Image 1: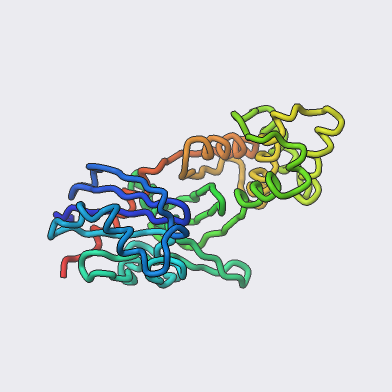
Image 2: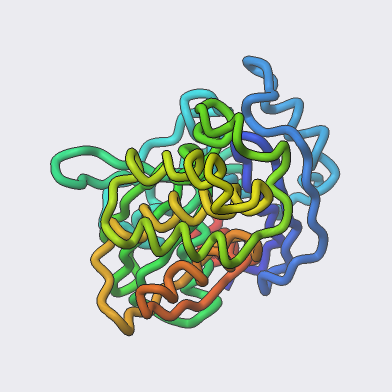
Length: 298
């Protein structure tokens, strides 16, 4: 086990988060900034990093691992995609070092699905963190979000995964389609009955290209209140994602993400008799800490 303190960083598209961890992986302090990679000008990453975390990096023995979009083409330094199957050892062998032995960017992962490439950056750390927290080596994990990931892990290694643009499709339909004229300005609290109705229709086998139009017609004929329509649309797109999965009744999955979103997925998966365990943001820090344990000081 490492005896070094660690700075664990999740640098995404829209936000920058960091945690100072003790040698046992316990969180000493956390910070969050609205400094996602899209807010950083060319060449500006070192300055932003120093402003946000410079005081933490003054310790001589600090190790900083950065996961997420900081390793993309638009990020601090492009890190390679590690091919699947991949576990801690494979990822650790392909770290991109900004300061050798001190600051490194974690590689993303890539795999092939039906002859087409798929990629992830950052989610792999959450997956490994969840495995550590739950003390398991085999699992099907789901990471809901703008681009949801379904990840198959065997013997502690990510074998393959699939990406679904569920959150992005919801936003596009919600804001930029004819449906936007029907929907209220804000989503509001979830309407569970409307959400369940949307999930059930999606699981029934109809294409989202057809079922999405029902948001408009249900409103047109006063079959659903306007306040329930966002939840109904959410149920349609999440249900469409779940319909695409081969899930036998009694299957168990691990959901990683915010309470609000994982609760929706848990509710939708229940319609297919799938049980879930939920893990929150702590998976990020646990995953980066566990990865650090595979790195030997120079």
